[in-house]
Image (tube, protein in one colour):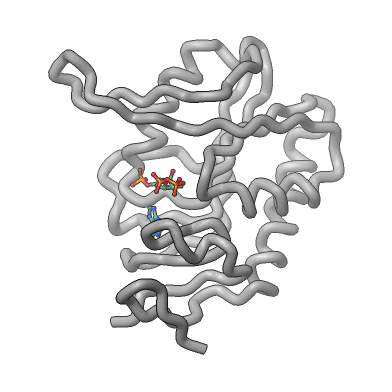
Length: 177
Ligand SMILES: O=P(O)(O)OC[C@H]1O[C@H](OP(=O)(O)OP(=O)(O)O)[C@H](O)[C@@H]1O
Ligand code: HPA
């Protein structure tokens, strides 16, 4: 069923059951790969809150989770935007860390933020993203666990918003052509 949010219409794209099935598979794969490492999951707010909760629920190994928010501000140098993490209190040194993101679109967010995490010298730094838009990606991000590769169209639901709304939808919608 079509829905309207603000001025735009959206059509169903990934059903709730399909999302849940794929997330279960990802969580099983992660549990298998990271058994015995007590990984620290770092979920990037706001968009990833649903994906993070569902991945975490489906893990069968010991694991920890932290939620962080990224704030971007204009740096004083010509390097452009600088991204800082709010709420990252864990020491990543020597840890196996898994970043949880809802979407890698241009890749800018993660490619700017990853060096700051690398700086803390985690033993392993892995990325799990529910969605990836390869056609939109201008900054390469090495995704270790990917839910779905999607076309370059605006998506809504399951954490993803359009101007603040739509995050509560349990399935994913695509902007109507
Ligand atoms: O690959 P990129 O083009 O950088 O886009 C991906 C980022 O955009 C979204 O966050 P947003 O900044 O919209 O914040 P939100 O999660 O609070 O909605 C999403 O959650 C990713 O963090
Ligand atoms: O397709 C999208 N939808 C909502 N938020 C987003 N942030 C990056 N890409 C998207």
